[in-house]
Length: 184
Image 1 (tube, helix red, strand yellow):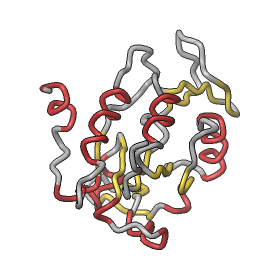
Image 2 (cartoon, helix red, strand yellow):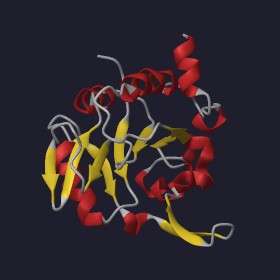
Image 3 (cartoon, rainbow, N blue to C red):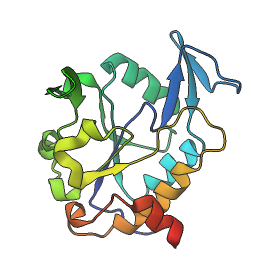
Image 4 (cartoon, one colour):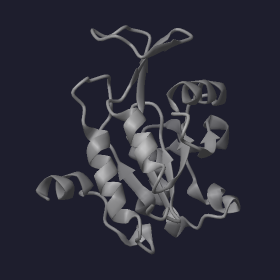
């Protein structure tokens, strides 16, 4: 069996791995949580199972901690172990002075006490502002709104494998990851 990478892969939840909405879509939901219809991104189970063989995985969302814990229980395959399941309480509150509002940022340095250096951490999110201070670690994924034809996780899986043995993920230009993938 291939050796697991020393990298930590942090995955966002809402609009990255799932779509949760109070308004039912035209397709069947995967499950209900509280007042939300929850739709798993296509290929999610396979993605998590396959990528966990290559990377240590964590889930970090800016949503409420209890919500994150409960949603993860419903989407995590039994064969997948998670290093962290973090919610809003682990985020830092930041102010956007231009828009005069506040947002929650995921500061990756908080993972150092788990034994990971910033050079080893990859974060996948649909919202750039949430990982703004660690942009060199970030892969921005297309927002998922419940589309049954979405194939983003297939593409992401293949791209992540190209980072598995990279010494410093922060030195790799990731802004064009999707077009790089589509060109190959």
